[in-house]
Length: 122
Image (cartoon, rainbow, N blue to C red):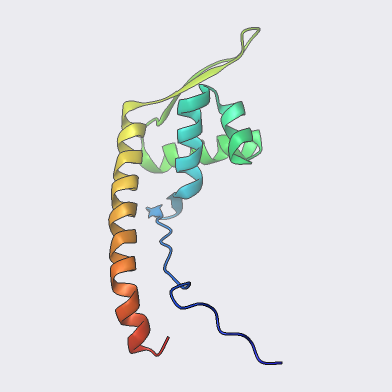
């Protein structure tokens, strides 16, 4: 049975931006985690909202900070009142750079995609 042709215009590009040094360390996952830390004020709840285990969240943050050489999250140890976390100023700047670059790349990909796809017969 032949495949039905999908509606025209359904196919489109999606850009997944990653920052790397020697290793990949900052992309959609870490950005989501930082956004949730901003909202929740702690790493545990932010991890839960992102679908990460608590240990994975800490691994993500630690790897980012090691690669960058500076803190992106300030932490306050837990206790009876629970721990707290706050995205640092540099962490906010990193997210702003990521967001701006991702938006520009997505626009460029959407603009160029029809021409390039047509050139290759898609």
